[in-house]
Image (cartoon, rainbow, N blue to C red; front, side, top):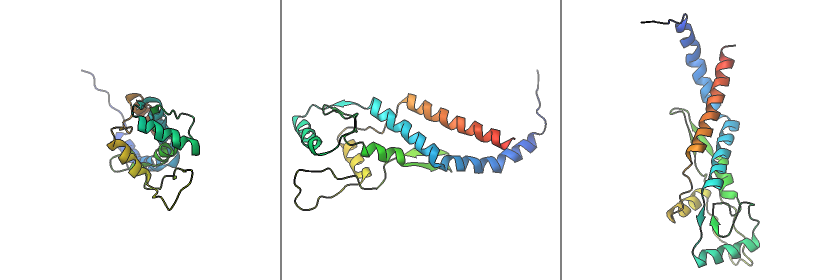
Length: 173
């Protein structure tokens, strides 16, 4: 039996303890990290969430709206990939929250209002829905795009690990 003992473990524990916890909290709350995570999720949804449009009514609706609205380059009338104008996924990418108690990054839509689609001639006011309301409606129709792939999860994990190792290096300089 071989036992390897590391000297000064108590000092390392004290050093890592409070300062490292504070550093992790700051790292998780940093806008840069949260935006990077949001962009990974956004890219994953654009690439991997694709549902064919089979309804003639949905095709007609999309054809009508794309005449009067700028569309995202990834938009395709026959494929639903949540990129009509790009506003919904942009909101998702910019709304990553950090739960520092559980050490989690939460990706969800905000309550900010979605840009109203333009119609040829609008009479009266139309209600602008929040990104969260639109997301709930889309999911209720059977298009749950908020499921990220294992590949995207691995990218996020790698990104956070790199940030953690950078923090450790800073702590022990």
